[in-house]
Length: 254
View 1 (cartoon, rainbow, N blue to C red):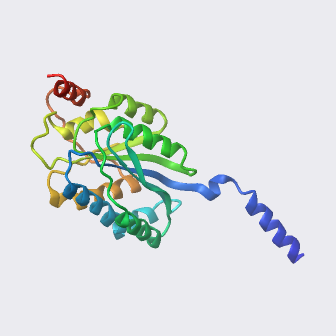
View 2 (view 1 turned 90 degrees about the vertical axis):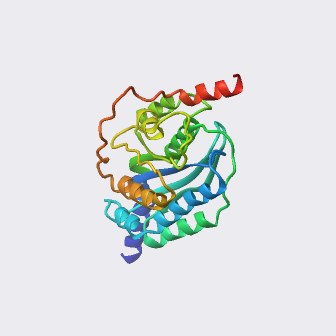
């Protein structure tokens, strides 16, 4: 009888539905801008912010508060339309130790140096990552950071709408550390042209000292699925979602 019981348990385990093995509260792609418009110090500051956030007890508490108490995370660095580097592929974070291991591996990985700014390329690439992750998430999120407007690849609004149509939410971390953003208000651009989907939000970073705290707060909010922060109504016309492409054309052919 004991052998039969053990055999039955093994058979049931082998035939358990995939969702029992791969269900997670969130599949999250951290899509991080590594274009040449930011210097090495800014790249390192950004990477350090993600490392510190993933190690933080606040992030683990947000994961632990979920129904499955686990999420799947990947870390993607991007620049031009065909310039994406998967620094850490999908990793299950189901304990504080797993979160620390992810952060340790991220900290030890070399920084990419790639050219161009294609937010649309990053969104398209990240969407395929989500759809082939092997997990069955309750929520699917692409987390885009960047310091400029899309200027290569297809229009960013097209990529955003395609991802949202597939059930993916896109959140943004517009990095506004310099005043020479020729395309106008980057926070407005992200709000109007980049983010989308249920609960989407953008959290601007306007000073180096804000970076680590902003990344931590952003991760906690999207892991916990909290309502987006209230954004005051903005006067004036919406952002030009093709402004980056127009600026680049003027630069190439004045």
